[in-house]
Picture 1 (cartoon, helix red, strand yellow):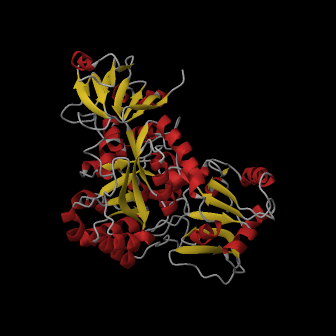
Picture 2 (spheres, one colour):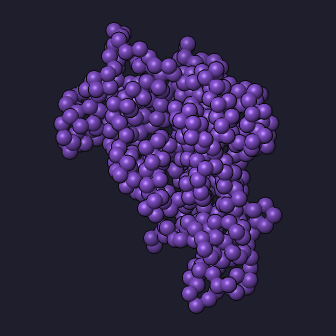
Picture 3 (cartoon, one colour):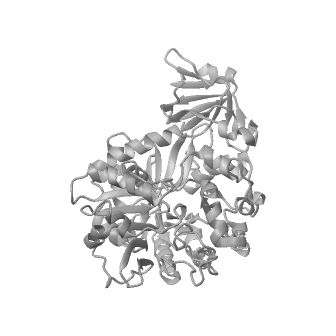
Length: 525
């Protein structure tokens, strides 16, 4: 049999424990048909075989980002870009520019603001000064807060008499008037008023976003989606444009509808698959709404927000498990993580016999006694190492000594936990190579290592971005290693990351990305 594609001339790091290294790969029909020495694989070369010469570079399984908000990222590419903006004044300048190009009365959306960088918390008046005639809706970097102007609040129906919704908070001034900042579930009041983008518009945004992911070597994702995002993914797939493997969550608000249809985890195919029910236990560190066992440092009385009560969360897990649906549960604070683990322990007789794969999304801060419990219960830790670089200062400020067990990669691995790495994009950069650097070094350039005892090795990080993430997205039989019969979802790096000194990891580049043996990205030279 002749192959469509043969890859030779470098090293192959398969990520398969029994056969970690090879020299060449043959691909036919989108799958790997041969793996081994160049002499062996060259037998598959025919007249029409395409040959990719690695030129001493390194071939790896394509990266899987186990936790990424694809629709949010696609939409964010076309909104006011607030990520990394260092001052309120700069945010106002960017808003003013967008207002000039937007018809009066239309919503102006922005994405990625981080008030922790500004030294002042924003209010509606700062937006009113620039956009008195446009409703403005800005989403925070951590996506757990929204910031509106007066016109936006009016259209959302939010006023002094508006009660705080369950699991949310309308921030108010001393007179009881809304400041324009909405936390957790309160932000949904504004999101409903803004409404989702049309599906056809979202399809285009998804296509643009996927191209950026390919450039980072990402061939699969765990997509945290809303219904409109799932609809757009299906439409993109129908058009033949979904050149990405997508495991997709559904929001807990849609659980009963899914159960009524008999939908179960795993529905779909190798391109688009339904994975789990997404449930929020608490908020975030950036908005100081993570649910804590004790007060945030310097914020007496603030132990965060219980977005979903333990009773309601347990009911969701029970209902989902009875219907054959796994759960992906967002938990940031140490109290939230403990409550989730308690609930998963109590409900384990329902979900474990079915082989449902329960995930804790982020598992950001754990109490030491809770660290071994994930492995004991068989719960996946879906974590984002890039958060270490972005959040270490906030963790020190608000968690103090408790931050010793923040992003506890080494402790969790040593306890036997399955790690699945992602980025939480657009909250953080989706680059797996930046995530690799963060998990291996736990330090910024010219900075000191932050709790270096929680660093892990390059092979361990690669495992979490390949086989670990594939397992977390129900696909370890299809991808995650370079093995005969598996999908030819591959990435070529400029060097073998295992052989690169830690100080040189930042120089690694993604040179090629292939999905099903099809070249979807090539770095310009």
